[in-house]
Length: 95
Length: 485
Image (cartoon, rainbow over the protein chains, first blue to last red):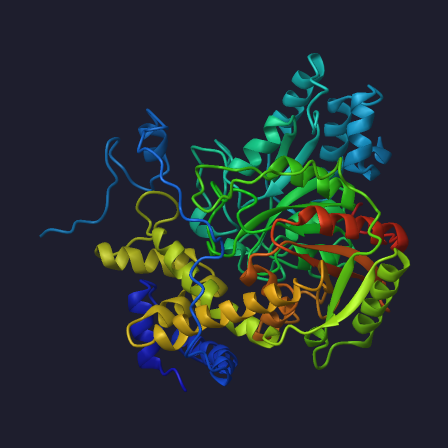
């Protein structure tokens, strides 16, 4: 298997990471060597194996949906790179 | 005051309880040494001024019933600390101030400990050498230009270099045990679900666990007893009765059955590692325990499995870093462009590589071939352990396939870097506890570690085995203070 530049561009789009040509080539090389290594898994027959989806055998506990942290809006907003006191601000999305 | 920093946690607690030392004495001693140790680059953020204030406050009305009375300590910068910058070693979180405290650090402060600062680590804990940190390399106190291991490299260096008596790290594929082994200290990766993940910057949620790192096994047991708790805020936290690990610690391991897995004898493993392992087997027998040859047939599939599961979970967890609600933001022509540039400029190369791997294995058309396949192999790996645990109480292996390597030696070859975790990764995939203890030196005098793997929730047993072996090994770390001017 080989991951080409077109695939790298496609994945970077899905991952929302902009990648220039030079970086794309480096990533293609790295990912190909990593996937060569991962291909080893194909040696194993796993048709009748149940996938392990959770390591703990207990079922998830339910709890009531209550507000525990109150009046922290200001502190939360403070961490934002851009805000207008009450809202997070992003580049214009509607023309 | 220089000898204060040489004391173990157990000694410091005793001296504070007997009023031979005050919390202020101890805190000042570790701050003084930390300030002289800038070259190690262990701290990302220090909180020295408020640490001294807290120590003075503790001394005015000391509560000596606490488990960590007035003990100063630094923690890995992956744990959210309320009102104190938490970066995860990344540019993208370089200005992030948490509004809440992680449960494990909360447990530590509730037992009287005092925060010294936040320790360097690989970016988002992705790395085995601390070289992926946005804040630069960490030096190993063992020797200049030697990596401390990773991802808890700053934590390992800070304990080995005596800048903090104890610390906590996180371990997703070996990030506590490998750096502990590289720096000659003890590190415990607890059973999945034993320590809360609440407030820990997430890497791979089905593998991440917090754990203690210390100079010796007893200190490690005491710190583990403090951090391990049931926490409703982590839906995978498990509600079970936890031991008083330090109180119940015993070196009596007579009659225990210890498995020696043949698959851990890998190609190209240096003779020094094989010799160390044999020495470990000898010590086990010397302690009155029995060793049994076992087989974990799917061991060689653990790393490839890990490099599907961990990046898949990481790509999903790291989707939250979009430059909107917190962290770094790059300028963009529109919203999408802003997202893409923020993530391109905010994440380092290794993190981007793993997000790309994860995105690829989860993408349409590849999910079954990679992610589902990996989950099935993960099941086989867990079955291997379940099978051998019908016959043995614990397993002994080397912690790493080599001693610490030079800074820059493996940065250009991701796969050779990943191979460092060959002995530690299976434990995370199976959710088991394991401890690394220093057990000898290589020909350069660099430390080498042995790993004891336990059954799920059987931390007491592996701590006991480690405690018994530690006494026999009588390891002395060779720290020359080369970095102190």
